Image (cartoon, rainbow, N blue to C red):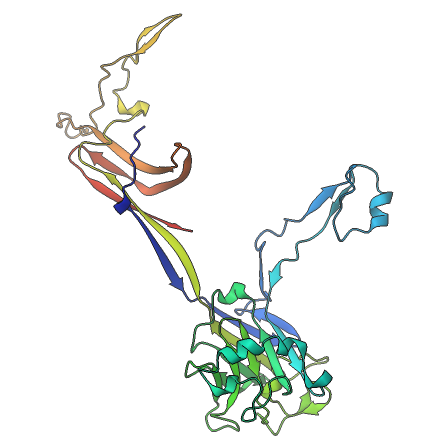
Length: 360
C-alpha cells in the first residue's frame, strides 16, 4: 500500500454559507412544518425505535420518569424504558394587559436585545413614547429555536401571514431588511404600509404589536373576549373551530465548515497492485515454502490488460484501476474513505488529481 502526505497547498479550509428556508403553519393550536404533518424537528428524526432504557441492578440508578415505588417493587433485571424529548418547534405567546407591575419578565429579558437593534429602526426602542413600551403593549411573541435559523435570520426573508377562513387577510414582511415587519398585502387594506412588529434576527424572535383591525367585518375569540383580528393576536390558540390561521416564513443562516483535499496520482506512480487479478492467471505465486521460510515469486508476470479478443497483441502497459482513496491520520489509522462512482484506469503515463470535499 502506498502512502502519500498532503502538502500544505493540498488542504483548503472554507466555510459554506447556506440559507435554509422554513415555513410554519399554525391552526387550532397546532403547528405544521413545511407543508407536512410534522410540527418541528427531532434530534432523533427517522429513529423512532430509539429510546432510553436501563436495567434494574444494585446501583439504584433509574430514569427520571420512573416512579421510585415502581423501581423499588421491581425485581432485578427488570427493564425500564422512556422516550427522548429532544424536539423543536416554534412557540407563540400572547401578552395582553393588565401586566403584573406593568412588566412581563420574559419581555423584560429581551430589553437589551431590542435596544441593540435601534440603529436599524426606532421601532426597536424598548421604552419609548413614539412606538410604545414593549413591556406594556399587547403583543404576540413568536419564538423560533436556533436549530431552524442557525446563526441568524436572513434579512428581508421574514414574513408573517394572517388568514381568515383560508383567505389571506394580511401579510407582514421585512421588506426593507431593517427588521420592520411592514404590512404589504393585501394592497390598500387597512393597515397597509404600517409596521406590525419587528424581528430579532440573531435571537430568533418576531414581536408583533399591530393593534389595528385587519378585518373589521370579522370577529372571534382570540383571548379574553371576542375581537377583530389584529397582529397582536398572531398565533393565538383557542378552543372550538377557529376561523383564523397563521403562517411564519423565513430563511436562516447556516455556516458549514468544509475541508477540501487534493490527492495526486502522478505519472509513474500507483501502477502496482496487490490484487490477485493484477498478475497473469495460473502464475506460480510461491517460489519457496517450508517449515522455516515462505518466499513469493519475485518475477510474477503482470497481466496485459491492454490485450483484447480483437487485439491479442496489444502493447503491454502497467495498468491499475483506482476505485477508493483512503485518508489516514499521523499513525496510519484509516479515518475516512472516498469511493469513485466508476473505477478509473491509471496507466504509467497518466496523471490525476482527485478533489475530496468533507463537510465538518
